[in-house]
Image (cartoon, rainbow, N blue to C red):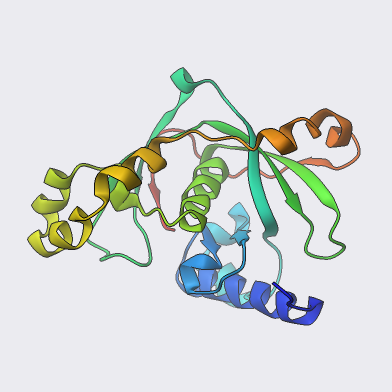
Length: 206
């Protein structure tokens, strides 16, 4: 709050650079300890090429400020993914369910205008992963304590307190009702698609 345009842009550039330096599909400001609701999602041409990531550390990608899901595909269409996270040990891989398709509303980084975007496949998965960070949820909250114990008894002990409550939040397929009422009004003017390759089982970095 209270940040000027320059500082927001600076945060955005740092998010993009950090994501690409770590080979991540997306990154949330909250994940980096920055108390701003902002998510960076990368483009497939950069995700699939480490060389492109290094050459273009400060170009491209999508920034979503104050992102909120306003519609989801049916629950029966949810996809299974295997995910990792930059803030957790690289050996830990969680099997999670994510919505196959989401409609997201956000503010544009450049002009502050409210826009809608349709995401599916890998980009939908990444968006949901990063929104979890905004709510204080990690992929460890999507799995049972017994799975955590199989990875590490220390990890289980750390996560045990409040795990059930966080897991309920992780499973909550929330939508922003206040924003969804305005979805149709803004759809034609400010709608776009930003979808990466991939659908179904797959690995993903936070």
